Image (cartoon, rainbow, N blue to C red):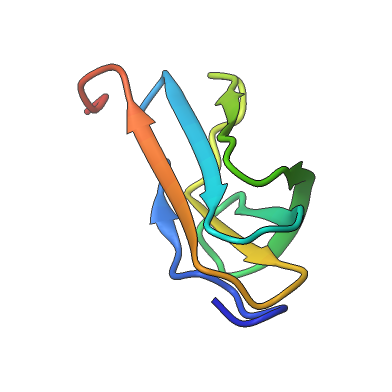
Length: 93
């Protein structure tokens, strides 16, 4: 991931229990910015930031009240990073 480059968007809509796990392979802390597309129109808003130390994984539980359609992340420096979404329930139809 290049500094400031946005990840592909990942689906959030329709799941009530979601968790975002952020990690990287660098020897220095990396600050990630988390953005949400609240209504599926492509208007992204900043949800928060997370500074991840080397060799650790930051876990963010996304409350059910946040029913954004999409989520994406970016990093403040070039890095090899993983943003993993865990869905702990079946989709709501």
